[in-house]
Length: 516
Image (tube, rainbow, N blue to C red; front, side, top):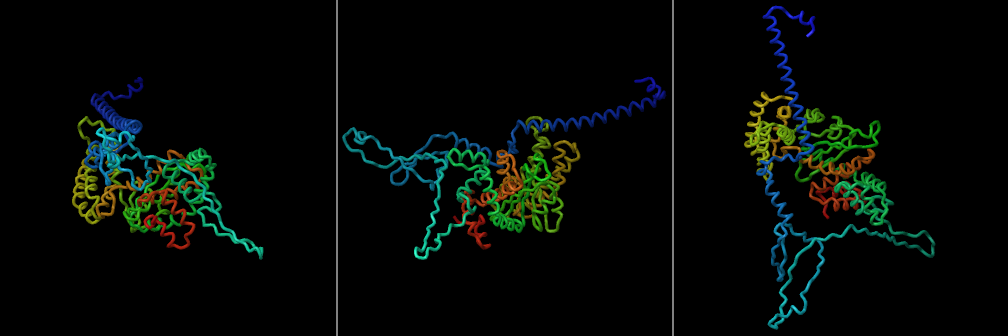
C-alpha cells in the first residue's frame, strides 16, 4: 500500500473496524459470485465432455420398466448370437429348421429350390430292405441379387397408305414422368429413394452406375430430381391442404447448408422446416426449405391455420401462438432433456438421487402413464390424464416451486427448472384432449432421416436443389408414416402423375388412397 493511501485511512479505531468489515463483506460477495460462475463453467465443461465422449441416449438405467429396454436388448442378443435351430415338422412329412431367435423369412419372397439326395447305396438298409422316402428336411438361406439394369424398348407401330403416300401414322408414346428422358419411373424412384431414404449422395450413385457400365453423371441425376419436383407439386399441395385443416400440427426446424444463396455466404445456415399432422389415420409430413429462421416463416407456412400447434420453446412460434383459434403445446421431451443434461453434470454421490435426477424421475412417471394408455381411445386417454397425469403434474409443480428457491438460476439445473416454469401452462395442454401428444417427438423422428442424410451429402448447391430435396423428403416421409414402402409408392406416383388430369386423379395418389 502506498504511503498516500495509508494517510487516507481513518485514525479512529471504530471507523477502521467498520472499513475492515465492509472490505470483508465485499470479498465474501466476490468469492460467492466467483464460486457460482466457476460452477457454471465446470458444468459447461463437463457437459461438453459428456457430449463428446459419453453416451448420447437420453434413457436412464431406471427406464427399463417404461421402455422394456432390458427385454429389447435380450431379444436383440438372442437374434444375433443364437445359431442353434430346432426342427419343426410341416405338412406333407416335411420338416423345416426354424431358428428360435430369428424371424421367419417373408413368404412372398421367391424361392429357388435346391434338392439334395442321399447316395443310391445308402437308400438300401443293412438288412437288405429298400428305404422309403418320408419327406424333406428344409432350411432357408437368404440370398440377394445385386441391382439389375434392363432396357425398356418402346416400339411404336407405324402405318402408311402406299397409294396416297401420306405421312405415316405412329402409335402414341405413353406419357412419361420426364419427357424426352431415358429414365423410367422405376429408375427415377430408385434414384430418389437411394438419395432421400438411404442417404446415398448422387456422386456415389454415379459411381455405382459406372461399375455397371452405365454413364449417368450426377448433373443428370440432379436435373431429374429438379424436374420431379414440378411433377409432384400437385401431390404436395393436396398434402398441405390436409395438414392445414387437420386441427393438430407438430412443427420443428433444423439447419441445412445451401452454397448458392443470394446475399449470403456459403457457410451461412439456412433451415429446413418440418410440419407433421397429429392425425393417426391420414398422416402428413411436409419439409420446406427457407433461408431464415424468422417468425415470418411460421406465418408463411401456417397461414390461417387454427388448432393445436406443438413446438419447442423457440420464440419464433410465440407470436403465432397468440392468434385467436391457435393453442400452443410445449414438449415434455425437451424438458426431460434439460434435466438429463443437468443430471450428467451434477456432483451427486453415487447411489443418491439429486434434484436433477428427481426431475427426471418425476417426468418419467408421466411417460409411464402414456405408455399404459397408448392403445386406448382419445376419450379414455383424456379421462385418465385428467386423473392420474394431473395428480402427477401437481406433484411436479409443488417440487418445482420449492426447487426454484434453492437453485442457482444460471446453473444447468436452474436453467432446466426455469424452462419448466416458463412453459408450465403449455405443458399442461395435452391433458385436455386425448388426441394430443405428450411431446413433439413425432416431428423430431420425421426429421431424423434428413439429419442422417445431411451427414452424407453435407449441403445443397442451390435454392432450387434445397426445394427439390424438401419435396422428395415430404413425399417419402409421408408415405412411410402411412405404412407404405417408399420405392413402390414413388414408382406408382411417377407412373400415374403424367396421366392425371382431374383433381380426383391426384387425390387417388395420396398415400392413404393408393392401391397397388
